[in-house]
Amino acid sequence: MAEKRKLTRHRKRLMLRFGIDAPARMAFTEDISTEGLFIKTVNTCRPGARILIDLTMPSNLVVQLEAEVRWAKKVPPQMVNLAIKSGMGLKITRFLKGADIYSQFLAEIPTC
Image (cartoon, rainbow, N blue to C red; front, side, top):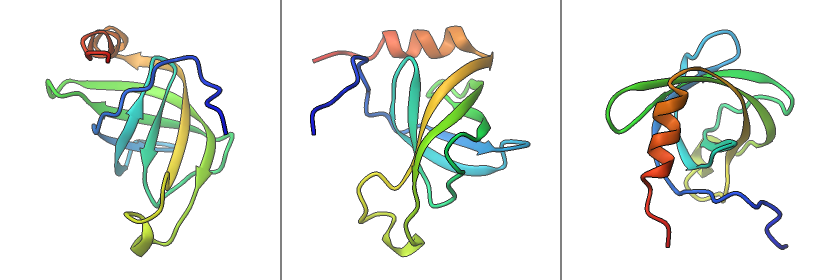
């Protein structure tokens, strides 16, 4: 299947916390872009759900954002490292804190 996205996604592993009411569950990103990110987790939310995220940048600054779950693939916990793309694809809907930090981080990632 051909890639439909026009945005560059960067494979970056950043720690984060996420949740519906409050960012309580810990997970990691697998890739990020200007408009979205993929979270590798067994604790998926249903597509269409709005979630809150506290994303810890390499500088230890926290970026707070809200995102919509676009798709989710749930696998048993013992298979999370074997399954390809087990987790959630998210579209960033708005930044609550740190939009400039996130943008600057993406701008500094070398492109091939």
